[in-house]
Length: 184
Image 1 (tube, rainbow, N blue to C red):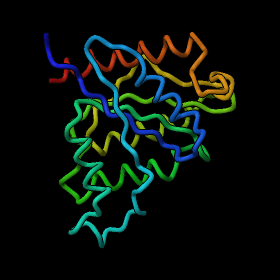
Image 2 (cartoon, rainbow, N blue to C red; image 1 turned 30 degrees about the vertical axis):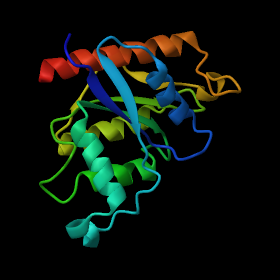
Image 3 (cartoon, rainbow, N blue to C red; image 1 turned 120 degrees about the vertical axis):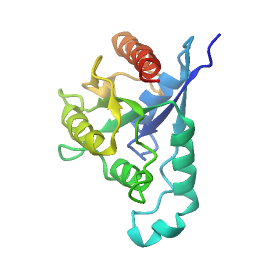
């Protein structure tokens, strides 16, 4: 049996009851024959400061190590002001620095998003895809997971109860595994 593909999930929301973190945890709780999904905590990252690049903060080193040890990345992002959250952009910036030592380079990546409206975070995904070009990442094109009315997809305990969303998340993870193996 081949080793499992290690997928590192990163939620772009720090909110305690974040729907995006719940969506990531739902993916982590699913059983996959060829993959395991983990999560990086970006809540302790300081605001990016180029002055600190020569001596990276411990939380940044830890994030970069987790990215490096992963086979693929899964971003789960809310949409704020037609783009990704500031905390996600901060994590992306830190892990891409110093210039020439980006942890993102060459990584296969998938994106899930959601919103309390009808577009499901689509604009945030498009901005994130633009960033991936410079970061030299390899985004999975399909399936797209954009969850509209995300607040209605979970029960009071935080479990993803919407079967169509569960199926789409599972489909995406399985496609990311195939994409990752293809790129190796």
